[in-house]
Amino acid sequence: MEEIEIIKPDDWHVHFRDNEILKAVVPETTRHFARSIIMPNLIPPILNGNDALQYRKRIEQAIPKGVNFKPFMTVYLTENTNQNDLKESYKNGLIFAVKLYPAGATTNSDSGVKNLKKIMPLLETMTEVGLPLLIHGEVTDKGVDIFDREKIFIDQKLDFICKKLPELKITLEHITTKDATKYIKEGNKNLAASITPHHLALNRNAIFVGGIRPHYYCLPILKRENHRQALLKVAISGNKKFFLGTDTAPHFVHDKESDCGCAGVFNATYCLPILAQIFDNFDSINNLESFVSKNGALHYRLKKNKEKIKLIKSNKEIIFKKFIKIGNKQIKIFNPEFPVYWHIIN
Ligand code: DOR
Ligand code: ZN
Image (tube, rainbow, N blue to C red):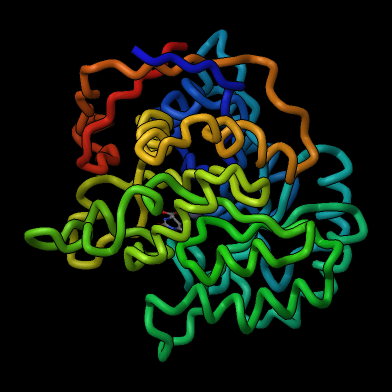
């Protein structure tokens, strides 16, 4: 048996939704993570500091008693976002970051940004006050191939923002390509990226094994194996510019297994054992702590967590629970379909 102890991890990209889903999924994250950035793409979205405050209260009610967990709230950037509200809400601790969704890029992104130029004054204000920008980095032009959306976003939009505002703290979220790893590595010191467990575990073939697999459909979509290898390389290397953001994104099974299925992978439950297994497979278990517990905090200028967790590698593989049940509905739990021998001892 092998055992390691690491600083309690943080998840820097989480979808908690609201109401019955919120209540069911919050404990899946708070069991292993100390802090999370909460995505604002509800219907309607979280548009200002007051929305964020109310949402934070609903989240706090869903945290199991006795569990220490801090949700960091975000605002959904639109072309009509109020500058003063952003500044005040950041100053008062109501918000931690601002999320940029290009309009139409993903789930509930219709009110997102169509014209980057219109939000440049807001980004300048964010730079002045030190408010971080989180980016869903995909272009949405109908003519662009779905597998090229991230690279083209980097070339046409991200590079423009970084050159104009090198002091703006930016996270390119859930990166999926070799191009993104290269751009981030070579980018300025305020630019970093998060990576999900599913993009580390699987390539795009997984969506089509023996038939169509809607539970592996997410955005940005899984890419070719050479891209997955590039993500693995930076994650297991301990490079400080890359850290965990799970993008755990619950949808009901009937909404995913549908004529027009939703994008999103609900991975909170076994995220850490899966990551430990992946790092171990590459003889890099020693760099797991950097990826899940240190690099993100460093990027966001936060202290590391004081608590620790233990992980044990046994000869018994985890038997994955299949679903989270909510009344007569269910959410499928991500299973990468390779054996996972690492267990978490809280
Ligand atoms: O797959 C995804 N699901 N990607 C996103 O960017 C959004 C998320 C969701 O909200 O379901
Ligand atoms: Zn997301």
